[in-house]
Amino acid sequence: MPLPLRNPDRHTYADYLGWPEDQRFELIEGVAYAMAPTPTRQHQRLVGELFRVIADALEGSGCEVNIAPFDVRLPEGDEADGDIDTLVQPDISVVCDPAKLDDRGCRGAPDWIVEVLSPATAGHDQVRKLSLYERHGVKEYWLVHPVDRVVIIYRLEAGAYGRPGVSELLGRSTCQVCSGAEVDWERVVKGLPDTPSTSRGIPPARPSQS
Image (cartoon, rainbow, N blue to C red; front, side, top):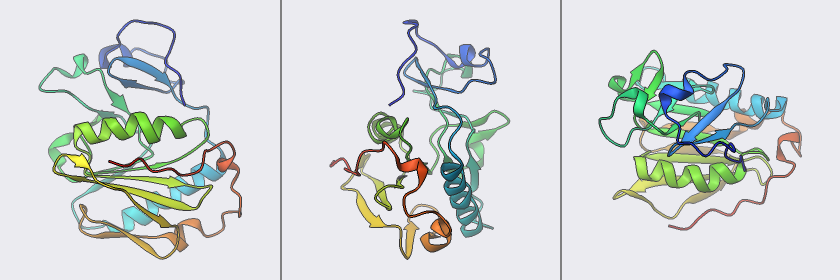
């Protein structure tokens, strides 16, 4: 799990904009988390193929699909951009409300977020970001686990994530909030080795129960 920087100060988006461009960080409630080093080739291939499949599925829907690095600012209310203290870079973000999009990325919760787990970020994605996305109203959150070859799907129900669905990366999975877009897993995982290098060090899938 990424560790917070040793600097105890609370950071904001204004601070973030002044940091070196060759270093990636996420901000969660003012705490800066250093992102993992350059992802492995297999991780990037999996994310890239997911992006292509989702973009194809949503063509003509009015929803926009973005791949990391893409800044998602999550304000608590109507504070100015510079005062926002939470910013994340999901692997894939789908935004269906064009009013949330600007030249800097997205302000507000995407409708659908997909994260592909890697050893350095698995705990961050499965615990810290899960709680964050639920609180900010991300309607669907998918966690793709390359070790167990499963996808864990959380859907927002009455303001909270219900019991997650867990499916093998076989057949198709449907995003209920984005025009019923389907992900064809056979296309996504085609050509990946039986034990992807991205999987080493990732704990087995243990979806949280809500």
